[in-house]
Image 1 (cartoon, rainbow, N blue to C red):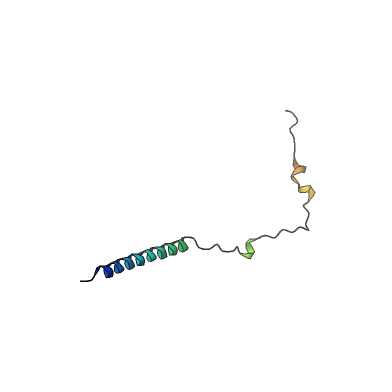
Image 2 (cartoon, rainbow, N blue to C red):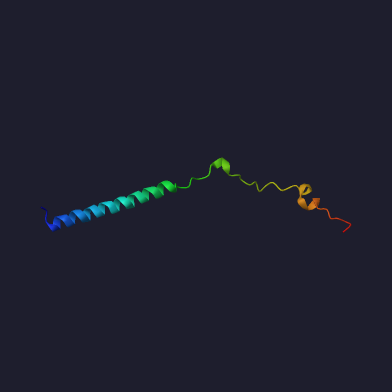
Length: 70
């Protein structure tokens, strides 16, 4: 029969092994649930053209009408 010291070493190393296994599995689960964010595609962004001025005839301010008979 094994002595007490050997039994305690086996029990503690088994507990340590299962603790490390749990931590590893949790880290792997988090990595699967939250994949890293990907960068948007280049064609998805629209570049503004600052050289083109808006047409003042198509402005919303020129199409405002007020009721006369309130």
